[in-house]
View (cartoon, rainbow, N blue to C red):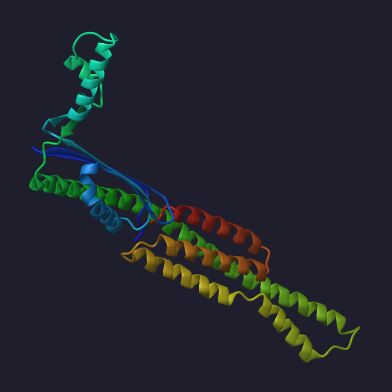
Length: 297
């Protein structure tokens, strides 16, 4: 299946307990690279969230952000450090005896001293059932966002496939034209050699059998039948990979390398006036396909 590696999805879910927002961005990458940002209160399901991403995304750089806003106002716990206060009282009494300070210690004085009073937020959802409900809501939101991301990547994949299929057809036509030009070039080469041998017969005594064998060898060296058959096989294999349900980006990238290798070999072996021009055109199409395949999952 041809599916793009790039995409974006965002959604929010809310109920009487909390509002959960999920944002997912995906871009090209050789492997699956997940960057997950979520609040500490959802740390217990981080492994599940990573598994969900791996279920939907085979490769790519994925940035997943989950934010949580509880709908109830947090409570407050205030702790008074009695030991510090006693030590402070003794120190102040000594300072008064020496006339260094005057007056009594006020609550405002204590609030200015972080060692004396500690204020902590207490989350309203303290019971296990409530935490589990919020976690389940977060999992569901992330999964829906991944489904939305999949839909976007599939739509982009359809566009990519249309472009790649048209280019695959174009390069296949070019290679068939290379085959025709190579046949013409080989026939012309054989004719040139035959004519030259005929000219030399009056001057040199040549072994007719050896000359014929050399002509055959020269023609064989320019024969691209094997390369043509392998290239046609790659074109057929491309269609099978694109139609298969699993991600195929890496396989298509490798297949393009093989197709490019066959075209290069054709260019080095085949002879003919139009061969070089057709080889350049085919390689240009293959390069454009390679650039597009870098976007395929």
